[in-house]
Length: 378
Ligand code: PLP
Image (cartoon, rainbow, N blue to C red; front, side, top):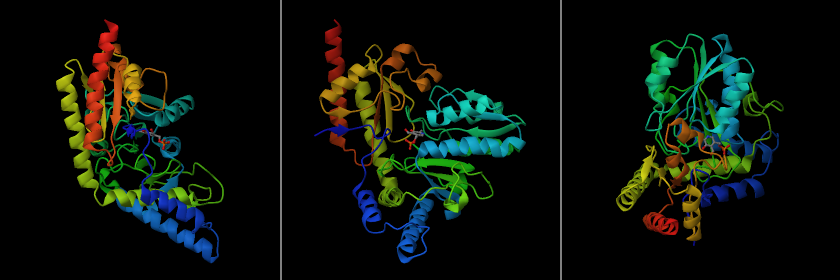
């Protein structure tokens, strides 16, 4: 039996989501735009799914648009957000610790006449709201900062960033990539103060290939995909009903016990961090804040070596971000960590299905891996 501790990369599809996907493929398979009963049934499922995701996001149904993934949500928010707010100016603030799904659109925008300021994370891996305030200019049209960093679990206080923007009367749109935050750290879109929020299904036990973008009512983004006018004309393309229904089912399944699960996962993470520190005096814990991500480094022991030893015991973890294989982590570099620490970084990410015995097995395996590698190096 393997122990899967790479839930920030992706999660297993929960039974409720799998069942909902099968139902939307085999039974309620009409096109929500069709005028007949099968279409109406699919439209009903679409509306119900949106209501569920809306309730979890804490906003109104008219503010939630289904997309194909977190990357699409980020691309849409960045490119169309900057375009929309360009009457304010052409300055964008983001951070050097963002996911590529934000960094690449920023590169695109920079190549198209926008000026991008990338803030550096503080020692804890988060972006300080004061640093955002200091970088704000009259011509800042967009601020995009992730809620939870996918490599370190560092949590940026988006509500405080929104307050900092408001305090100086900034007209900039505020976007947050909440792909790792949704259901892991509590927030309500209506109170957060962000104009745009990206989320993704496969990080919360829905299948891959579905996400959503929250667009605050009153913000009129142009569509990113143009065509048949689905999603109120803002995101064309026949709705991916199996994924959407599964996304909603995964949200519903998580929601009942979300608070208790967050607490339990946070305690498992904390206990593992404490045990790893006790057994490995040279260990460095990196970032932290989100309950489900534990990033640590054994300086001098390359992360791929530790990963391989863990894999030989059936334990799956990750080295930095799963999205950029073979390169030194830009997130850990932006935090100013020494190369030895970066090269030894390992990310363990939990889900609500992670058990205490799995975390115990991880800790034993890490300590053993360190002893084995040290002996081999002598
Ligand atoms: N943003 C963050 C913080 C992520 O961790 C990821 C995926 O790892 C994405 C965006 C992209 O999401 P998706 O895989 O749904 O495109």
